[in-house]
Image 1: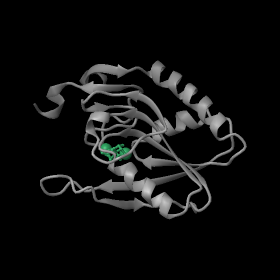
Image 2: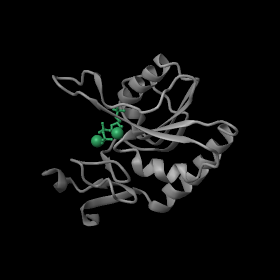
Image 3: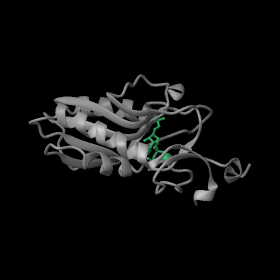
Image 4: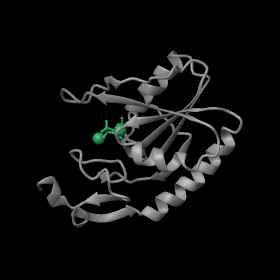
Length: 179
Ligand code: PRP
Ligand code: MN
Ligand code: MG
């Protein structure tokens, strides 16, 4: 698996260090509160587990799975719920955890949904941000790393469902895409 990686963009050590820093910051922000931490399946799971271990407040965990349709010539921006939360959002302080923001459509949809469900507050924490990909208006509250306009895999991010279990974020060799 590792020999299919052209280069490592963000090392395991850098990710772990960033999780510590973000965890400390979020511990402060959610001091004396009981946030509902929502991981967006599947990509957010490695980051979610490492980040939440660094938060020193009580919190509740839940998961949401959504899929966006990219039918037709351009992606429609339509998002569909595949798995909904088990938890009521009304009155809660929501912390959405993502691995990457690209177009921003997934998060724009989720933020609207949680507003509609009357969340008390909504924050977004993302490990990676790819600002060049943006088409929806979404700004994360906490960003780990900005990534260039390249297809990145690892630490939750997949190519055809593979590479999520890499401990780092990297770029695939072009031949892996069948090029
Ligand atoms: C990826 C990624 C984000 C989303 C970002 O998930 O994990 O959730 O796309 O893209 P956007 O900003 O353009 O919406 P994907 O839908 O591929 O599902 P996965 O997490 O199961 O891989
Ligand atoms: Mn995802
Ligand atoms: Mg994916």
